[in-house]
Amino acid sequence: MNRRTFIKTSAIGSLFSIHSRGASTDLHTITEPEREIPIRDEFDVIVCGAGPAGVCAAIEAGRSGAKTLLLESQGCLGGIWTAGLLCWILDGYQKGGLVKELYERLENENAGFPDRGGNRAFAYDAEMMKWLLEDLCREAGVHILLHTAVRATRVKNRQVDLVITESKSGRQAWKGSVIIDCTGDGDVAAQAGCGYEVGRPGDQAAQPMSLLGLITGVYYDEIEPFVRRKDESGAATKARLLKEIERGGYSPSYKKPGIYPIYDDLFMLMANHEYGYSSFDAGEVTEATMHARAELFHIIKSLRSLGGSWKNVQLVATAEQIGIREGRRIHGLYTVTKEDLVRGAEFEDAVCRVSFGVDVHSVQKEDEIRSYNQGIRSKDYDIPLRSLIARDVNGLMMAGRCISGDFIAHSSYRVTGNAAAMGQAAGRVAAMAARSGVLPQHIPFKETGIRN
Ligand SMILES: Cc1cc2nc3c(=O)[nH]c(=O)nc-3n(C[C@H](O)[C@H](O)[C@H](O)COP(=O)(O)OP(=O)(O)OC[C@H]3O[C@@H](n4cnc5c(N)ncnc54)[C@H](O)[C@@H]3O)c2cc1C
Image 1: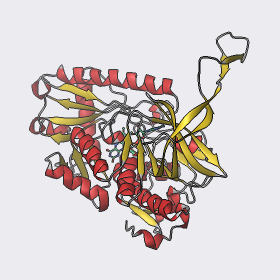
Image 2 (image 1 turned 30 degrees about the vertical axis):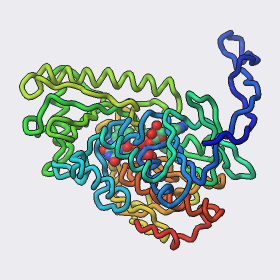
Image 3 (image 1 turned 90 degrees about the vertical axis):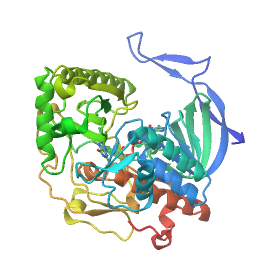
């Protein structure tokens, strides 16, 4: 990547002026001095965020011949799949494309399996996933920057033409013909001034965060009654596990805790709900993370105290990144709605067919045990390409949980089989748009070859 040119921006430097905002001496603002930052390189496609959506977008853009940059703030690719320790892909079993390829590659390594309990889910080893995603990106010629967060954009004549990152290398700018926001929270679109929605209508309350963990020292055959199975409702297994944790003396914040099998002696644990925290506030995310991590240790201590099958249970890892269910839903050229789910919408520009139903985790503790589908009967429905294209600026696409949708629709399409499929489609369209020098919305859909 060559140092090419500079743009002027502001940053915290050694000299800055301080303005008092009020009587209190500790409430100040500062004016950052203007300074030049390097435009490091130019790309056809820049993908911001390397979760399930971003990594698939980058692989597909790279394979389509686009010079592609993938920017990720964590130290690995995969987002919730890896840094988040999810280990459990939903709504991917009927999909082709990269999702199918990932399943095959993981199965070949004996590190991925259709759920043994018969649920329509795919379990995998998060460490193998990290390595596999890096390998796939390398094969596709994608330039990767880890530990690099996107902090600003430049919008010229309504077109996003570069992103500014912060990392150990300082502040750097990267030019791109098409930018894809796969940050989950919609950071890049918000920085570019796009309109967005957060949480449920009315009070903007968002679903809780959960920190996931990996447990070992227990064996599938011995704890099977507490592990997700198809032959009885998930609710029954979860109720049994809740009672078991409480029998050990601790009451978890999530009243439907789950244990999800990976290997015979390795499981993912989801057992906490962090209510009322904003994913856009570092202090709040920190507090939620630390509270959740302490809780996971209490849960494991509680189970271990029961002896028997639990006597050697251990927490071997907690996620680097707390699982964030909801961030911004960026305004697109189309907004997927609850009505689309109910009628089983079909679109000519469909990029992904969603089968997963409505799954609203209660936004407040008091509603914890209410029905997750909110009494809504959804049918399989399509996500149209238009909901992946930003409405308010040009040259910007979204994929994953930050696409344009309402509160209810998001609770359904957000799972990772869909995020990955959306990412792959966005990557292909972005590459075509960059190559032809047109906006993504001007690529004739028939020419994309996308079949959901
Ligand atoms: C607790 C929990 C349990 C879930 N359970 C399941 C399940 O069982 N199965 C399932 O399939 N789905 C599940 N989901 C839903 C699913 O995980 C998410 O909706 C999914 O993460 C969407 O993928 P994404 O790529 O859009 O976002 P993410 O996975 O959140 O990826 C976003 C990526 O962008 C990076 N990033 C963020 N901001 C910046 C920035 N400014 N600059 C650079 N990089 C940035 C992040 O580090 C991250 O890697 C669950 C979600 C949660 C939170």
